[in-house]
Length: 145
Image (cartoon, rainbow, N blue to C red; front, side, top):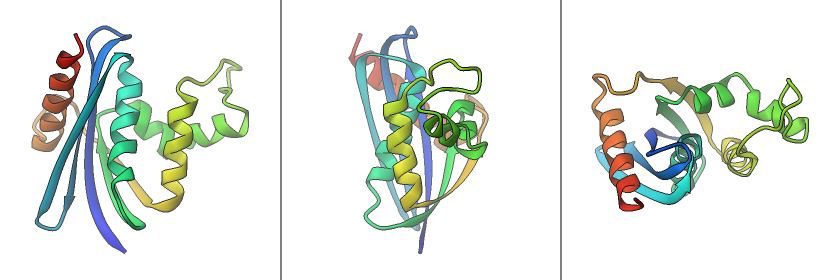
């Protein structure tokens, strides 16, 4: 199984508002950047979209080291929150509706294909790949202002 490293970030100007996402995929000596945005979205939707878009590019099951500065994404996967929400019909343990069920459902489908190892990275710090993903996300969000 190939091992791929993915860095992702999302940005939103206003929440909701114009948003963008960025991702970097690294496999051996290969590196690919991708990004996109939407005119009316939320930061969490952009964080999730970055991960989904990056994983969707993989053509076969891979071992993935996923790096994100989003506790929402990392904890949703690592702590099993998203699986619990899905089992309860997209309802959280506090009986409130889970947000972004469409994106979480797609991400859980991708998690079934790939072996994810999630890592939280501090945003706006020393990590060059996280910083580059942030730049991509902000540039995309600015296109939708």
